[in-house]
Length: 65
Image (tube, rainbow, N blue to C red):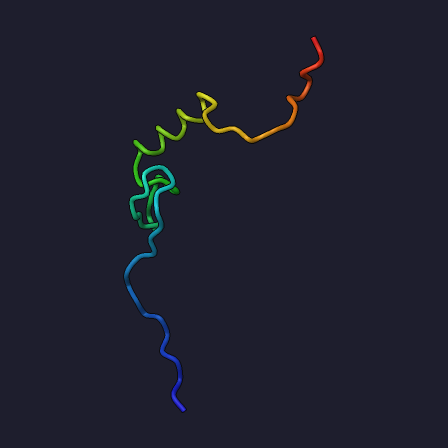
């Protein structure tokens, strides 16, 4: 019976940048989870512009003046 060989691959784990989809190394990436400073700032701008929303049936406090 043979023993399984351990995964000794030295290639870094990669993942797609959530902004542009470029495959990016996770280890030693100071812009995690983004691939670059540019993608990080674009995403921050989208949050500031309220481009990201969650669906809701009513707005909290919508009936109060």
